View 1 (spheres, protein in one colour):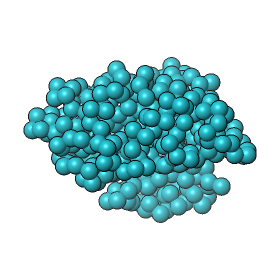
View 2 (cartoon, protein in one colour):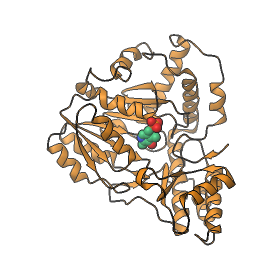
View 3 (spheres, protein in one colour):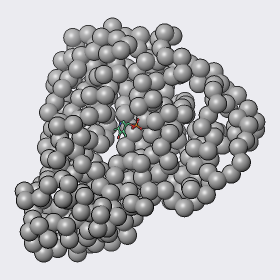
Length: 376
Ligand SMILES: *Cc1c(COP(=O)(O)O)cnc(C)c1O
């Protein structure tokens, strides 16, 4: 079995695997309601919200579509695309309303002036990806929300690879709707997603949204601590355990751990002369949950990632779409730690060294970062 160092699905903690191996329970029982209640309350903390959180049986994209479609009573929505998942927002939103697609070269930062112009020209909502997993860039959520506020626009944020692994303060930042997927920083298996929704978002509610993804149905049933349709019960057992692990670790500690792991990967790469893929500006940052590195000269994607997998049983991700072969991505999310990070970097080094792509080792650099507990 491969060690998964990809940006989801992530390696499962043993406790989470065991949590799923049990008999089904009725979903209209107090037993299930207690699980749903705990998961909802813990997810609120991860989102940084006091408002509602609805859990849907479906992957992260179901959450993106539920958010966009349920709140699509807008003349136009601005969708920011500087990576694959931003592009997904464009393509989802086009099915429900008029879209102003702000496209930036993948891997580059968002131009906030362009966002402002689009809103000034009449968009009533903006959708963007906080942590763009496809390029390893952290987009400026707070700044985008601030601009949107000037125009009273609805703010929808894909927090799928930031919630539970990096700082997200939905209420404080002014985000109206945010989404998380189970198989990323939360450390659970794939198949569940959650959408956090504040009161203001309901002004944009469109009752002609897809039946299964209609968040109003989730809201009605949430009052009885239930889901509208049969939930993926084994995945709820798993999510419940995953969130207990987060509670035990402490969200602050967890965020610090994620930041430390990503920093270790970045410092390691730089020390070896490898180039990080994102082009930052003063508002963007490197992702704290996934690191995208340019494919060095002298080795192919197949040789690098294939070699790592065959010889070490470790899986890292390649580039998506036109970035295929041009970058590779190391996920450091969920319940992995020093051991997994060091094994991954050591394996990558070995494969690259044997192709004369790098000289020497930078594991000491990574270890030094990983050993620092005060990393912010
Ligand atoms: C993984 C991911 C998604 C899509 O999630 P699925 O679970 O594959 O549907 C959306 N947005 C981001 C930022 C992601 O990383």
